[in-house]
Image: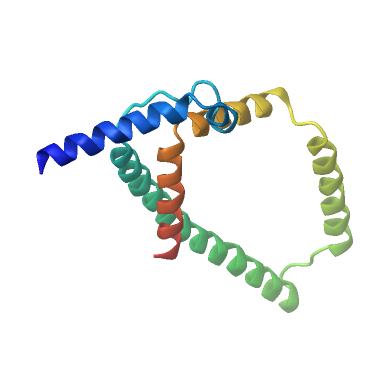
Length: 145
């Protein structure tokens, strides 16, 4: 059985090296994507576990945040209805529209810092495609659990 394992590992290594030499590899994954840090299985397991943890926490925090915002809105409505608080809805609408306009202006061309961070994230994903795939799968499983 150890012979078969070594043979399959060698074949996988040769196949990976062959794929890295192809034109499509560099188009899809970029020039620097061929650096192997760990085995594929290790990257998938680490990505999957961290993704599951992040998804699970995201789910719990999201529920808590939704409950807090919804509860706050209900309390505000009750306080408004009973006369404890008066809300100037015209002013709220005016401020929301002003915020929308400012957000729309800022989305036309993001600042240099944002573009740099997006480029760094793209490079990380290209260099760690297996790890990122494991993380995405784990994240979705964490959201579902």
